[in-house]
Length: 357
Image 1 (cartoon, rainbow, N blue to C red):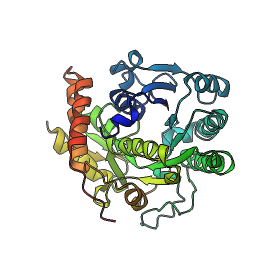
Image 2 (image 1 turned 30 degrees about the horizontal axis):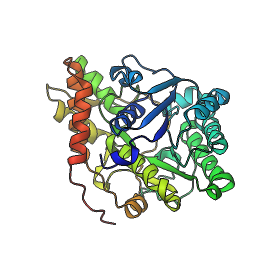
Image 3 (image 1 turned 45 degrees about the vertical axis):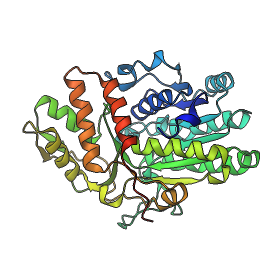
C-alpha cells in the first residue's frame, strides 16, 4: 500500500468497523501499521467478515451505538484519534422503508454525534464521512451527478444520508475549518467484494443462490448502477484522509465511483457473475413489487480524479471475478484472510492508469 508509511503508528478511529466495508478497511489499516480503534454495533449477520477475520484480536474494538453520544465521546476522548473514518450507518434502502426513524437517527443524528466529538477533540486532524451516491435529488435525467448538483433523497436511506452531508458541511464551516481540521465527505457508489453477507444486495444474493444451486432472482435487471470492487473506494478513502491531513485545502465533497464503462445494469452484473461462477448458474427476472428504486444512477468522478490524480484499478469484470474467488474460498473452507491479503497485494500491483479528465 502506498499509504503504509503515512499510516504507520497513526491513531485512527473507524466507525462501523464490524460491517463489510469496515472490516476490509480495518484489515488494510492494520496491515499499514495504524493504531486502530473501532466503534460499531455487533455484526448484523452470522457469518460475518469481521468475525471471520478475528479482527478483535488485532485492534481495540468497542461495541457501541453511534446514537449513544456519551459512549462515543468516551471512546474518542480515550483513543485520541488523529484520523476518523465514519462508516457506521444503516445502509439498506429496503430496511429504511421498514425502519425510517431508526435510519434517520443512525445516519443523520449519529453523524452529528460523531462530529460533536470531533469538535471537542484537540487530536483529530482529518475526518471523512462516507455517504452514498444516492444523496442526490434524482430526477431520472440519465446524466451523471456532479458534486454541485442538488442533494435530496426519495427513500429514507437516501434522505438521511443527504442530511448527514449537510450536517458535515455545517460543522466544517461553523467550527472545524478555521481550526485547520480537514473535513470531507465521500459519495461512493455500489460496492461488491468478498465477505458481504447482507440481504437485498445483488452479489450476496447471487452467491447465496449459486451455493444453493437455485436460479438467481433479479428484481430490477434494467437498473443501472456504478458498481466497483470494495478496494477501489477504500483506497480513495485512505487517499483523502492521508492527503488532507497535511493539506486541509484538499478537503471537500467527492464522488467516488468507477469509470462510465463500469456502470452496468443489474442484469449485466448478474450475467458477469454467472460467467465467473460457472457450474450452470443462471438468473431470472423476478420482480417482487418492492419499494421505489431509481432506474439510473451514475457519478461524475472527475473532481476527485483531477484533484488527487486517481483512477480506478479494477474494472467490473475483475471485480466480479475477485468476489467469486473469495466466495469459493469461503465455501471450500479455505483461508479467507490470506485470500484478502493476496487480493490487496494484487490490487496495489495493478497499474493505475492516469485519469482521462
